[in-house]
Image (cartoon, rainbow, N blue to C red; front, side, top):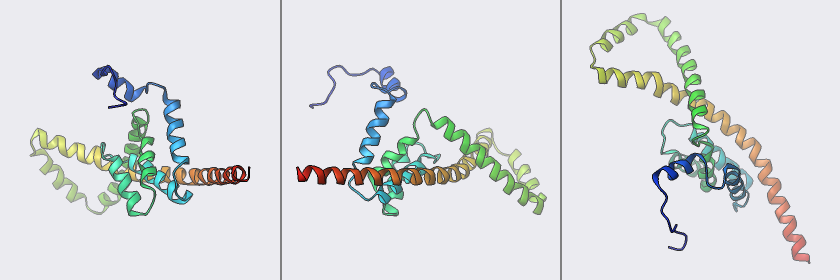
Length: 193
């Protein structure tokens, strides 16, 4: 291969490059921003694709963010490549913040829903608690993870992801549009020369 390394990286260096890119985060962010600006599509579709990528990065389905973002972009006729670039919003630095905000928001919302349902029927909760005590340790762990982490993360991730996606769309669309207009002007000026 032409671009293959002469010396293979060790496992430690590969892990280190996930958190600290070789040429720095600034260079990685600049590269992604140049790729976004040079996409040959309308500003609306590019910004929509970016926002779907950001929305997908709030999902608790780690490892499937690329697929989820691409699927949403394809489903809503947005730019699929922009959605893949948008999933880089979720990275090892931002994931702890995304997870904390999503779980807190989801817990707040699910607690409010639980209080409303609890007022309607307290006996159902008592039956669930008696069934819960008869479960094995592993089953208890799965139920606790499911109800205490996964469901709140999903609810909060959806809410926070939609808010973040709207912000990204509203900020990126005018930027992409102005960049494309400047690029067309430069092409016209260069064509006249």
